[in-house]
Image (cartoon, rainbow, N blue to C red; front, top):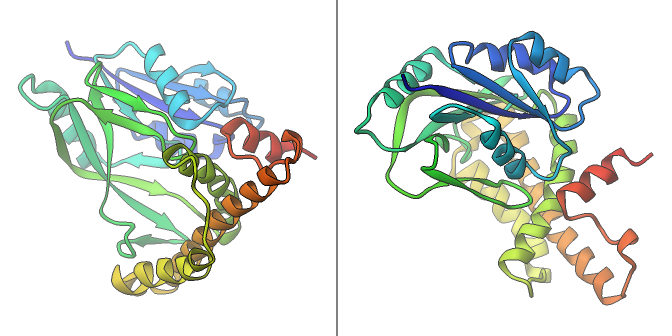
Length: 275
């Protein structure tokens, strides 16, 4: 019989686990990779019937890869702690893994909820994510941020929605934005070791991001939340360019490593927790 393992990466997600793990209670196995939570995440996951693997944080995709290695199922479903599998998607997943002639990897359509409402425009939807794959049919593509699994063969698309319960308020969005834009510097330098921001990008990049999100992608149709997301997207773009500029500046000044801006997952985590 084909077995499905759910792999979840979590850190201080105790309040979300009942919803996320509950939506996949029908799976054969649920593995939670906990990265040193201090809010009882590990205990809450165990109470909900999941198997917990504890591992220091070294980046999202590496945590997922470790969880996949610990899982025992023939198929893997990667699920974040702030996500929820709908009954329609659950049925589609069961059908996909039962079909031996189907693709070895599948994308799911994610719908985001932010600031108290569902977001369907602004470039946020449809958001197709490769989350279901037969063991060995996909591999990890490591990056400091937005690392993912990529398939080596055909990829199908499943019916149903993966609900993404993201930012409850602007504070949460800005806090995550600070971490993510730091990690984007590492991604950029990996793609282009000589990358450096220009004055034009610093000025025009945020404006272009706002217009793309709010006007071209019709973010205005999501009401106030669409406006907030467009403004925050512009801010994200500005911070990404500014942090690359700062990193290059301090690099030229031969600043010691302890004073250089953090751009790696472990460095960002340490900076966040430093008193």
